[in-house]
Image: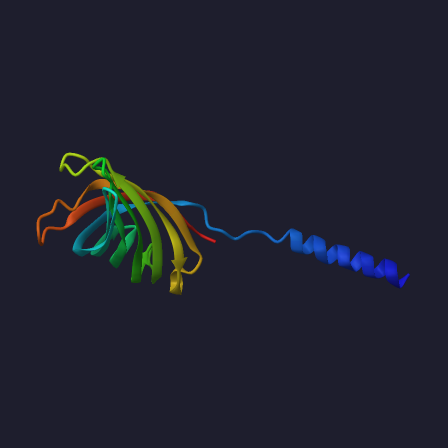
Amino acid sequence: MKKNLFVLLATVVLLLLVSIPAFATPPQDASGDWTYLPRGDELLKVAGENVFLWNVEDSVWTGTFEGHSVDSGVVVLHREGNLFFKGTVSFDSVKVNGKEGSLEMLVNGTKPDLSLETDWKGQWVISKAGGDLAGLKGQGAWWGPGWQGEEGVWGDIYYDGKIHFE
């Protein structure tokens, strides 16, 4: 009898745990502008005809993400002339839909050549969020001409995607 009661109780507890509802918010559109100014590149290495640079930028975000970030990562100039970027966007404090906290995004992108006529295209994904933004998830795309090589002139990028809280 005790064994049957224990099995019944364990089954009820298991069913209650399995049926716990998820409280994620519905996905919302995210969009805006990301402007940045490189601090300068540091040569990491040359491998064959490919050049690897460490890049750090100061950025201002408007739209869904409101704040200043420091972006860092590797830029690769391939021997064919195309560019690749992989890095991290770090906000000590950013506002998202009225909430404030820290945020980190992973970004990557490509540019077909060094000409001013072609745009960067890439992706972003939220990797960490803290403060009132804890549990924020999201991902999307970014594109635009970026920095044009003029000292003191900010580069323009546009972003969109979806965000939600877990």
